[in-house]
Length: 114
Image (cartoon, rainbow, N blue to C red):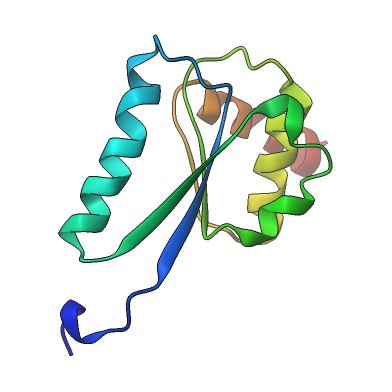
């Protein structure tokens, strides 16, 4: 069974970070995700998640993947750490690039290493 034979499901991807139009990565990441989806004949829905609006992370249950994007410092470090912890604890695919990866290390050190 090839990709074309499978039912198409829309993948929900949460982009954690504070969108800044002047940051090239913030323009490129949604385009890259869409290009990957097109190549796989899939659908992708992208939701920007500003760090001050993350709260307790309850809304993360809807996402198939979480990408903590570049351009830190984030406006709300705890919001970013909450998103990362949610992904880690629930085994949601996670990608952290640049500051997003650095925050993933901080989250792991705080919550797993003590």
